[in-house]
Amino acid sequence: MLNQKRLNFLAEWKEVLISSCVAVFCLALFYLFPAKGLAQAVSSAVFFLLVVPVLYIKLILKKNLADFGASLPLTRNGLLTVFIALIISLLMSYFFIHFTPFRKFYSVPVYAMSGFWNFLLYEFVFFNYLFFLLEFFFKGFFLFIFSEKIGYLSIPLTVLVSFVFLYLAKTFSWDNALYMITMLTGAFVAFRTRSFFLSYLMGILFIIMTDAYLIYLFKNSL
Image (cartoon, rainbow, N blue to C red; front, side, top):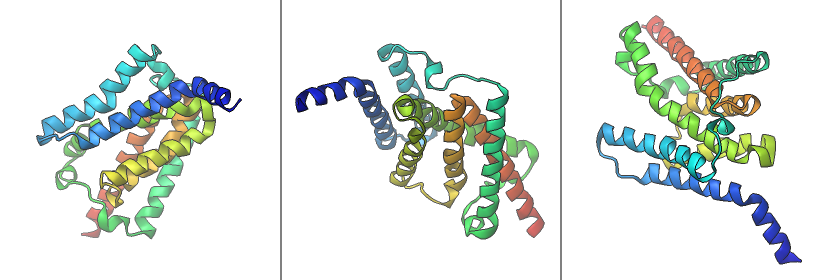
């Protein structure tokens, strides 16, 4: 009887267990891969956080990418969810900025503060590429591995795994506080809307607005 229960459990959770192993495998290789220089670092991030999960979804699971959040449902409820998450994110960042040591340790690159176009270049190129990859991996691939089986619990699970990853990668710091906020609010957006694109759009908008506010505070303190 016990063996039958185990077999039933493995049969029911087989896809989730294998997919979670693939996800951990991708994160481990991304973290451990000996990339030298910016080009290799970018290439390894794209390969392990995007290419491998996409190939696994399409070739092994034989599912659509839309099943893992690769859709853009511009519905009224979806946009309302994005708006509420954005407001909550901004309120959390305001608290961090004014009531914690956040401003002492978080830094916007000097060249990003030197002009409007440099600011956009930093946000949409240098920061955006890794942010998009992490959004796809955690709030697309990883979150939707578990969403059908455990529902809303997939949100804290995704946040926990992403925080552990940041800690192991030695990037769990005030410099990544804004990203940590987007992990909390963005995972909720992705789950509710079934779209990591909406989570990504909310997150990048939130970080641009917060960085612009920090630059404003910095220049007015001179």
